[in-house]
Image 1: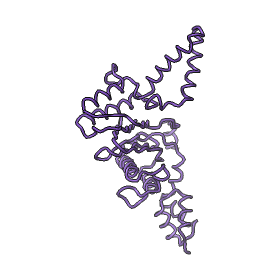
Image 2: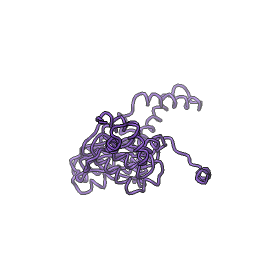
Image 3: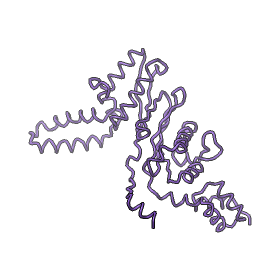
Image 4: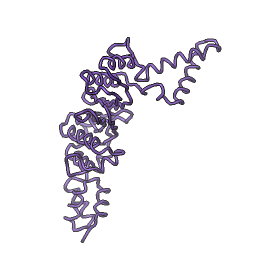
Length: 302
C-alpha cells in the first residue's frame, strides 16, 4: 500500500513523532496507518505525545551574541525539572536553537520549529522531539528575542535569567565598552526594570498608578488641594524604580544608569545610548509542578 506526504504529516500529528520516524513507520507498515502507529508505539517513539501534556516550567533562559557582538539572541527553553537544565545534551540543544534564531531571524516559535537547525539536516521540531525521547521530559521552546546592532548578552545564575541589551554607539570596538555593556546587562538582571525610559511606559499604566496613588494619599488624610502634587512626586519615584535609564546604577547608587552611561561615553570618546533590552526569567508566569516525593515513591512500589 502506497502512502503520501499527507499521510506522513497525519501520522506525525497523531503521535508527535519526527517526520523521518513517521516515514519509516509507514514504510514498515506498507502505508497502513494503524500498523504504523503500532510500530511507533513498539519503538517507544509515540510516548512523545504523552509527554507533551506535562508541565514544563523549569529549564533555562539563555543568551548569546555572535563573535563581533552585532547580533544577539535571548531564548527560554523549558523542561519539567531543573535537573535537566544541567544536562549537556539539553544545553547543546538550547544553544542550537539560539544559533538558529541568530542565523535565520524567524518570526516566532512556530517558524523556528519549521527551520533546519543551524549546522544540521534536521528541523528544530524533529530535534526537539528527539530530545524529549532521549532526555525523558517534556521540553518546550517558549520564547525568544533577537537584536541587531551593538548587543550584549548576560546569563545569571546558570540560566535562571537571560538578558539581551541593544545599544546605539560608535565606540563598541573601544576598550572598556564590553565591560560597560556587561554592567548594563547585570543591572537589568538584578533590578528588573519594566521599561527602557519614561516614554516607553504606556499611558494607561501611568493613569492606573495615579489612580491608586491618589486613593492612598487621600486615605492618609492629605488635603485635596495638594493630592495631585504629591501624586506627581510619587510618579517620579515610579519612573526611577521601573525605567532602566532612571534607575540607580547598582554598582554606584549615587549615579543613575543615564549618568553612568554618559560618563562611559565621555571616557571612550563617543556616544552610547541604550535602545532596547529583553529580560527572560526561567518559568516566569508559568504554572509550577508540585511534586510529592512520598506519593512518587509509593507509586513506584505498587
